[in-house]
Image (cartoon, rainbow over all chains, first blue to last red; front, top):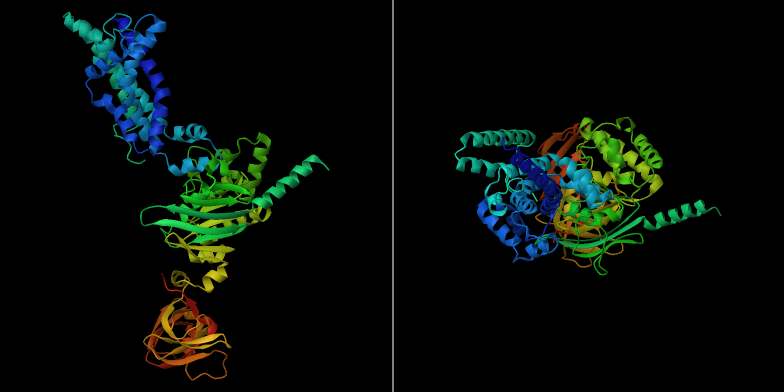
Length: 225
Length: 381
């Protein structure tokens, strides 16, 4: 078993989950409660990774991290090297790639919270933050967990973006899905099968847990706003 | 003087100043529908009453800070909650008022204790508990602290939601069709508790209802709202028993509404004679117009018309005329008579009156109506 690939994949998926928990909740809550007329632009941008081929996404992330982009220059000015083909670069790409899987279930759950409960909380003097953490979040915790679990499972299985942005550096960017590809290329079907089975079992378990928690995860953008 | 006493007195002075709500708002809801209303609410119950969809709840939400008016001014005593001229718009959280939502909006995942304490987390723990318990005891739900909202009865939920609003000592209470799910006696008991609470607090209470009976029975003041406009306001007696507007007349059981033409005026008597359309009957009614030939609308309660089998004499009532009893209909303990005399009158009598007078269909009878039972109302614009 290729344990360094397994641990790297788990490390990446966990880091993605933590970042998406911090990043996804404000985005989801903004999308659920804003009345801004152009918010569909933001919705579309967040949802883009759902429909784009991973190579397209990976390509632009790669360009954005490169030495000709402001982000790439800013990063290499203190890191001493570029973002591409590093773990942080892979992390950024993975977060973008899994963003809709976190944000959509969260936003769907937030917007199903009775508006009168939110109004009641405001009238009782609560700030927006307090209303969010005391009322909205507890009542939509299923959606938040769903979003995080889906992001986790989705990150485990990503291939195209990793290959484009991370390359194939053992212990740094070589995840399970890349390792499987390598095994197949080397005609090592036994090694590929062991990793593939592990990944499949893991994904099946996470999805089972998610569906048991919440049956509406594939709901598109919330209708009730 | 003791400093705590001074601050108490200052607090009371502050409350006294705050205990008057004045509202003047314009809010456009669509191209064709807007809410334009101005009214005052002193301490006590002010009923916002009118047909559904007339804008009552939107008006309440403007006061609460949940809906932003397009223009106007809302002030609670010296405290300005909203003023489009000086660009003041306090958030709902800053307005410090209580709001009892129609669906109560109790937080389903919190216990009754957590619900009731939700608005007073900044109060020191001991005082928080004292205040909560005092209120819960006066609302008879002190034993439900540990329950969740879905584990208690509908009436108890109403009481818990009301306690949650009042425990913050709001300077204004808003009630949106509260207690609709309750029977009359449960409703009356809760409102008695609310009244006794307000006897010591003296805040304005805005109470939205579509039921004229409720408005009439509960309010110290009534504001009638229809299609986004205030069509009448004042004491219930003034608004509902002397209606100046057709909608209100229809609500409060003016079974008889007639169009008529003014035939003669008597300034010295303060009366005028009006001929009902399609009939030779002329009614003497209170004087409200200054020219003959003017069109008026007259509303008379079915219970305010007397029936006699012979020409009455020795009566103070000024209107007596003949008609033919067309039909009788029993409705519980009321007998509804339909009497034709050019115009069709509906009259309510008791079953015993029917039996003693021998009222049967086809019989000719006399109708007797006092001048001041004839209410003049304004036709709808």
